[in-house]
Image 1: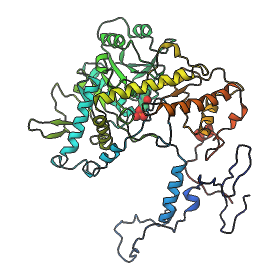
Image 2: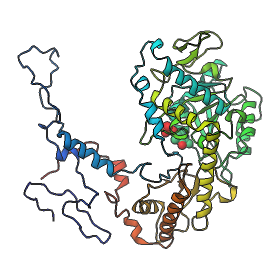
Image 3: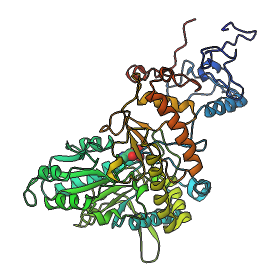
Image 4: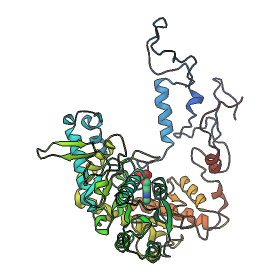
Length: 525
Ligand SMILES: *Cc1c(COP(=O)(O)O)cnc(C)c1O
């Protein structure tokens, strides 16, 4: 099967069907085309562009830094390049292909109108150092978006420049640190619940704080009594706790209904309340975090307000601030003067009102995300955004209640869930686990849900449908999901080999993490 054909081409893998038999010589399966790495198909001397010959007699202006050896990169012709990347893209899964149930990620449909507006040359082609008089429209977009964010959250200030949720967390905690430092003591500890997203403790540690866990109650929410006990009884200044970081709705998919009580207790000892707002999609238009006593909260524009994202970008994580933290917010920010002109405020103003901790980024943030998010807001309107959160929550509850009879749902009795439904792998047979179920779902044509997070649930599976999905699409998912769950409960051994139909079979994920091969090596003949 692997013999070279006339052109010397030999398939690099054999595609097997579920019974283990090779089914084609090429590795292709009709319209599913196999594709080798660019290093295997490209040649160093091939290029898709026609460049003029270099005049070797002309004196070099590189001062001895000319490359003396080939760079070692391969090239393809233009049609080969187009095919290579198109074929690879067809082996990928995306929100435009089907339901993408990743919990904690808010993978929603990205309206094409957003893309159209973000590509307008007046937004897409401007330079961050362009004269401010020439980019007034772009500055107005930033200003309008800031107004929407402040209105939706009920908070008086916002820093627009952070470039992702985690970056926003750092911005918020640095502002909190600056506020404590200005008051004479940065304090030592940040409290984070057990169910927190990994970025929360990482942020606190990065900002120089010790991280301590807040336990959860059996119903999946912050244990308020334990938290109060940790804060200490004392009055202002007595506590070593700089801040608590709480995600609301939390990563168990539940609303922290005691948030106001928690915030009051933290404030009573002079601490600040950081809210991880990544799950804002569940409450946008219904709850204003400012009313809950939040001091700082990032908003993942790329989740709640759409934008294609994943694999680390692109993102945007503006941070809204309470009155108490506003003086410490980062530079730069956009201001409108009395004549209606927009200005970027770049310089620190050394009065009591401005004690900025510095900068998060060189410039003003992610213009492309700003344009998309504002387009999303304006096209939905205030009523539309409220319906977004209502539909997202309804969809998640539909999934929770459609699966709880067959799949362990640890917090199903804690009341309705918010934007995501959480399950565990209790009662799976034959040593099967969440991982096997996830791989089985790939064969059914679904990107798996978030697995093994949050850590408080054994074999966690976190499913977030968002408002994007129709009832028909959710019903289809539930049917497929129930089928794979039943196989797991029955201890169906074949699940251990899944996926069978993906472009690549099951990978050794431990080896990939522990001994990653980061560069291609020519295989020994
Ligand atoms: C996504 C997410 C983050 C991090 O946001 P990024 O934009 O990926 O940096 C933080 N907390 C929670 C709960 C999240 O879901």
